[in-house]
Image 1 (cartoon, rainbow, N blue to C red):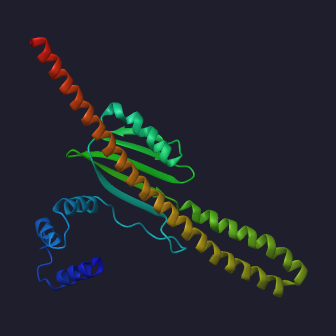
Image 2 (cartoon, rainbow, N blue to C red; image 1 turned 30 degrees about the vertical axis):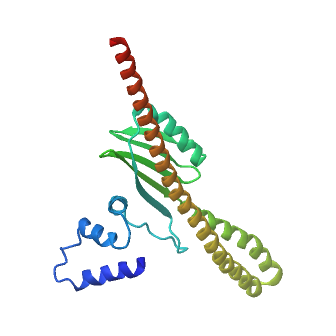
Image 3 (cartoon, rainbow, N blue to C red; image 1 turned 45 degrees about the horizontal axis):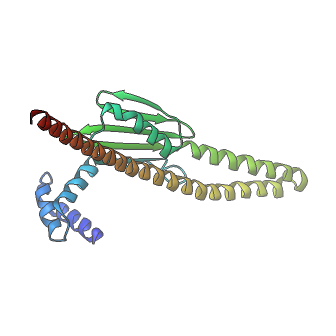
Amino acid sequence: MNAIIQRAAALQQEASSDKASGTTLDQIQQAASELGISPEMVARAADEISSSPPDVGLSRFGSPTAAVYSRSAEGVLQEHELPGLLKEIRRLTGRVGYPRSMGDSFEWQSNQPDGLHISLTPRNGKTLIDVRASFGNWVGACIGLSVFCSLAIGLPSIGELGLDIGGALTVGLLLASAMANRSIFSRISRAKQKTALDLAVELGKYIEQETQVARQTATVESTSTTKIHQTLIG
């Protein structure tokens, strides 16, 4: 269903003589309601998609060297709640990074074993979560390992089997290791992308849970204060 709708929308845009005119959010919500999708979910999806950066490039092995995920969470953490957020980030990532504040935004960055950057920005009562993972350094590690192993095995064979046979064996080992490393890096890339996505999701859940607890606590305190005030007056 998703593929059909997306392709139909693309064909509609191609057939339109006015390329600047697009479908409004209200029109999308109206069409989605006929499929049983609530307007609130459409608005949330539009907010997440509009805040997502463009796609990242591919490595020589054909897999992405970076992952970028953005999502929004209901609620905004207060300044005194940031230490708890920092503790949660370290628990989720297993890393010790470097936090800093940039205006209203909170940022956290770690460079080992690869790049990981998190930013949280308040917007209209929501928090925009941006997770960026960069793991292109694993490409160099895979290439270096393959070249080292191939030469370690191939070069001695040249002395024993001669240049023709030993050289052919060395080249064959280089090609075979390159194919193997392509598969290895592809798995690393998928794992890193999933980790970044899971991190964005879990941070969203944490923020929504903490803000909900803060609201409930504020409500209880307000109710208790009102009762005490009424008791004193009575």
